[in-house]
Length: 197
Image (cartoon, rainbow, N blue to C red; front, side, top):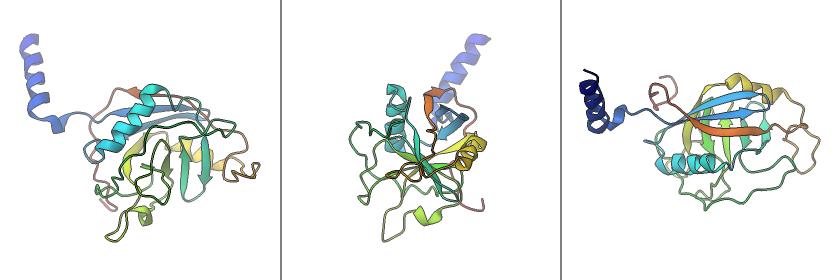
């Protein structure tokens, strides 16, 4: 009986790959744990890139260096003393994947060059649909969503900032990612996060 069930589950996983669970990552920070669900179907290159940094231990010890209330919390590039870590090559912008920059979603940070994202990411504190791709310009690629720990993100916003002249939006006391790791996924969340749905 158990053997038949195992064979059936194995068949389903190959025959219906869309039913596979989305990968999840847990960020253990100084203020608590943030759990993220990633959307590899919509943003395959971005998710692969994020998981490569996660699996290599790159994010361990990294700080959230930019906190803008009512906008975003950004991290993924600097150590506690604002030393920029060496990154992998930049990736292609996947902002036209249909996902919107809504509250709780994760997007890749980049320069004015659309294809310049490396390790830095941000969590949207509000619906920032102005960051979405438009017909005439690329946006910021959404690749995941906070499914637990948005209260931890909000705690970051409450911390005092302004101590560091070159990084005025950084918290006065660094908020670190102590450990970033893949965790077992739950039921797949529908990645279509269009506003109002």
